[in-house]
Image (cartoon, rainbow, N blue to C red; front, side, top):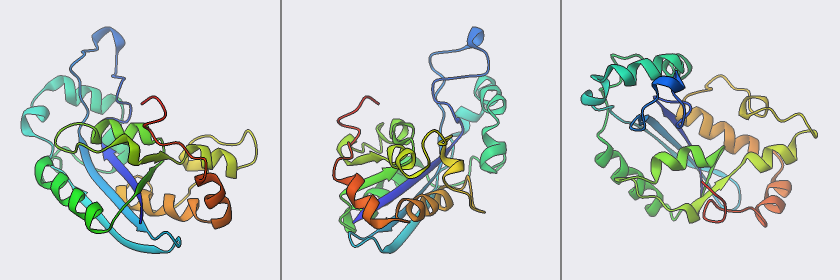
Length: 198
């Protein structure tokens, strides 16, 4: 079983903040939602899951975090509000549910666009996901689109649920599998994040 995954976070750029002169090394964006669309090895759509994760209040109480998040327009892009961020599952509960979902469905590979972005969040405790499972679909997009036209996910995928975790995960799966023969050919030589720098 394959999983197509997307995350929405409080920071679009994990290594950037609003002003390099004011940057702090301890700024850590937080996960807001994770969406996963399962696809069988016969490339048929299967189950899906979306998890809403509560952002800790102590993180929200730090003005620097709010300033960085506002500057990056993270909430504007993702469609959340400050009031909604504290509500949801805690990370330990969400990580357990995600791990059980992937394990119970015998997931062998997890596909994500710019997979290193999502993996940076999911590498940490309590998620503890493994780089050997993650495959980035960006090389597939650059292969599928006319040469020189790739300009990010949005010119490969255009859909009404953009910037929702499950909406993007489903659209990514749909776009990746538009040409199943091409997907299978690409996947034969696709590298996991364990083989590439994160």
